[in-house]
Image (cartoon, rainbow, N blue to C red; front, side, top):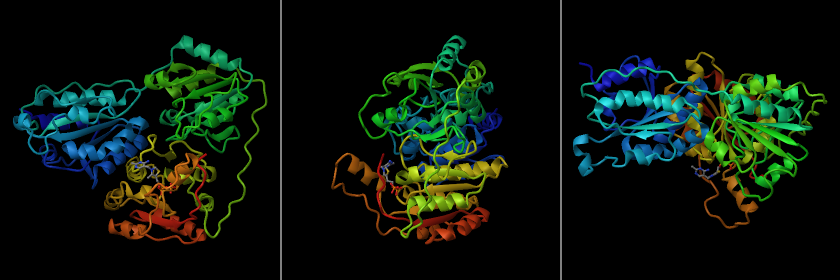
Length: 531
Ligand SMILES: Cc1ncc(C[n+]2csc(CCOP(=O)(O)OP(=O)(O)O)c2C)c(N)n1
């Protein structure tokens, strides 16, 4: 008779979930026992890294990923990046071991007495099976829950004595839809309103990239002769940023965002929240006389929008349908944006100069993973995303995602055979939140390049303090960190790039290497403005 373990592994095989990201503990060993040869365990040294690696891998493969954590403490360590996975809308099946059922009542060491509550509210479903025999079917349900829109993480707590139990019948392997089409009548109303607009603008969000819908976005923008903005603080990019219609990324504050949209009678937002704000700068949500239409596949996002009318639907299906429904606009296309001024390379090297140098040597099919908070505007100005699936960061604002996510993305690039080069730009503060991901990248011999702009401070927190008039905050400086030594300690190559002329060669070598390379680049300590 098959055991719960055998039946579960068979199901995972059938679902093509044969990679397990994780960090093991005693409560997981009975699951991992006699780990099958056709499975792969991607070992992270900390659960924050395990979760974000799985997230990056899931996003880059376009499939769910499985991450196995250690009962309450391990799940707790993974929580920050679970929050991020929730906001990223990444389908993750997070499992954690649980103590022996026989002892749960008396709460032994490593019991998680309220396991299904611990990950709330950052999971779509959390469950500890009532019987060992329910584990395989719970996996099936977890999978179906994670991938349906809006996609997101789910959590299973799995008692360690369940795995050797006799299984019930294997669960039926089911498929579910991962997108839904918009209500045709409301879609037609949206199309009519946009078509009748004098000066419509498009605001596109990360769901467009997740849906693989750049061509539909370009088709709609060109048909409407409309300017295109990126939604504020996006975790992915939605439109070719070298396209003449592209206007840039909207500011992430209420008043300034409305100001940027002034002059448009209709703003059509597709695949983003309305809107992702950061510092509170009061003002109207929209300019006077501007109507907002919102397309999202997330009912929660539709409900919490402070303005506008919403339509539920997959970003790609809705974009394609709208591009068919609206007639070509009878107006000239928007004028192209002015090019940025020539960079200044210093010394001291400015972030702008660093990213201009990086852009000069950027591999055409490169994938950028970004977690460099104060330098984001400069980075995006110098390194526009021109291809789909080329830009990743966290939707949440939580640090410690970028570095491990880049490892997961680089692994996905290798596994899928696409082999796109992956370059992470990670601030010298952000670098340390999930730094041990470097060890996994080294063990996997991934040719990941990690550029670390070193300003020896939490610069964005200084600019936030300036905007909000809160002087005298402690803990904003980072002296005495040797990034290269840390990188080498985890098995990576590491070399300080003192001059921007050296960056091209260092980057080429890193991307051709058979291990990760960390490239700290000292930059100016000037604090850029937050807005
Ligand atoms: C998990 C987590 N802890 C703390 C913060 C607060 N925080 C936001 S930005 C930042 C500093 C980032 O420093 P660095 O990566 O050096 O970038 P810089 O701002 O200097 O460009 C911190 C600590 C956060 N966002 N997430």
